[in-house]
Length: 109
Image (spheres, rainbow, N blue to C red):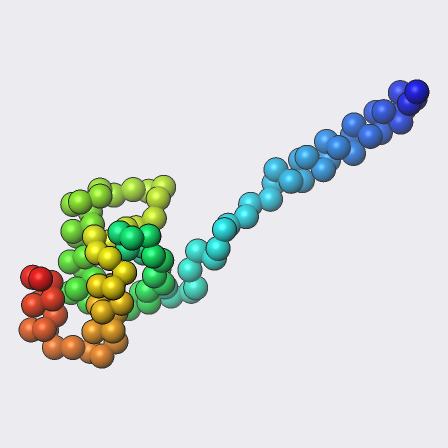
């Protein structure tokens, strides 16, 4: 049989361990690097985008359409209304500094 002193000591130790594990916050993956934000495509692929792209007309339009289609959520991720192939193409277009006419044609598409 275990003495009451030992039992109380063990209970306090377990309480400390339980309290310490509740205080830990773990993220499944990093939120985003400094100067970047994270968006998801409709097929669930994750993209880390530089903040400078927020000035781009294509991203402004994608975010506006996403707001109309999915609404604004404060708890979930930003999901853009396109698949991952389109996102890859759009990012490559922005990186190449395409003309405004081509950008507008892409938005209309």
